[in-house]
Amino acid sequence: MSKLFLIFVFYITLFISNYSLPQWITLNSGTGQNINAIQFINPQTGYAVGAAGTIIKTTNTGINWTSLNTGSSVEIRSVYFLNSSVGIVCGYNGTILKTNNGGNNWSIVNSGTTNHLFGISFYNDSVGICSGNSGTTLYSSNGGNTWLTGSPTGYMVTFYSSFMVNTTVGYSAGVNTIFSPLVAKTTNSGANWTYYSFMVNNNEATLRDVHFFDTQNGIAVSNLWNGQGGISRTTNGGVNWSSQIFTSGIFGIDFPNPLTGYCVGLNGLILKSGDGGNNWIQQSSGTTSLLNSVDFVDSINGFAVGNGGIILKTTNGGITSIINNSNNVPDKFYLYQNYPNPFNPSTIIRYEIPDLLSTRILGEDLVTLKVYDILGKEIETLVNERQMPGTYEATFNASRYPSGVYFYKLTTEGYSEAKKMILLR
Image 1 (tube, rainbow, N blue to C red):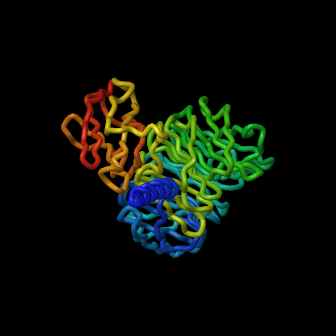
Image 2 (image 1 turned 60 degrees about the horizontal axis):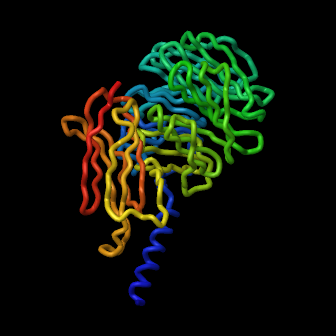
Image 3 (image 1 turned 45 degrees about the vertical axis):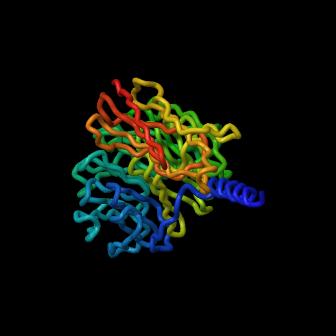
């Protein structure tokens, strides 16, 4: 009896500890400087920038980071790589630096301003915008080699983020002098701008980052005057906005696909959405540091950076949706048919992990859920983690794949099953 009791206690303890662990791990960035922005250009290679001229690079998925020498100690606020070789950063005092060899060497680019620059974005290898304080908006049509000043100029507005939607339409987001959130829109590649101001549910706020899905639909995130955060949505190109309020200020946003999005902010805040930003679930980051920026390589592999040189990483999207983990624990493995099916562009896959404590002590399984194309090539990993007994759901977003037949396969210890699904556009 005592042996069974000890096993039961061990199992319960493991269950509790499993769900108290952070879904994000902390990496060694090699710097104690505040990190303001991060961008990965492929699953292995990424760049992060920050205070005191900090630019660091990884080529092994964030395991190791190397400091790059730019010859400048000016704070860097934003980074954008056009391809594997060409990258541009911007920062204080009108600083713009450019590399043509993956960060090995950097050259100074004349920005034409001494105002602080906070956000930079390119649509392709040629067309990009950059914005900052005192209403500064810059635009380039030659890959950042030269920059021109957008109109109007001189407005007492601070822009903290820029986002280029296509070759002509772009947005910058920030705050005006009366502390109202403000979005500027260009329809001619940055030459001219139209301003839209609004309140976040009647609250003053500063927009910190912005993401647009197309020319009309976008999301902006903010920190409010009282330390709370806002997520605001527009469906008409920035003219009108509807907002949600959250407990902590939000400073960064990224959508690796139209349905899956992540936000980061004050007190280590990390939020995830699986429905295009309509609903958000808070994740455990394991830190109370301010997180300034987030970037995902795909729907589950991502990084967040913040003050004190912190870099966080997740390889499973931070969390898997648990829809049932009550006393009614499944008694066998089961993989459901996806729904809807056929689908366009996303579908939900449900599966069950049973309680097999009688045959194994650990009480948890290493579970993988992968998607394959008609040729059997693996195209997505939806789940790759140890999971306790329960019923789970995972979302597969196929927005970047063509119509056709696909397969999803659930694999764990002693069990494997695959089912067919149809993407029909």
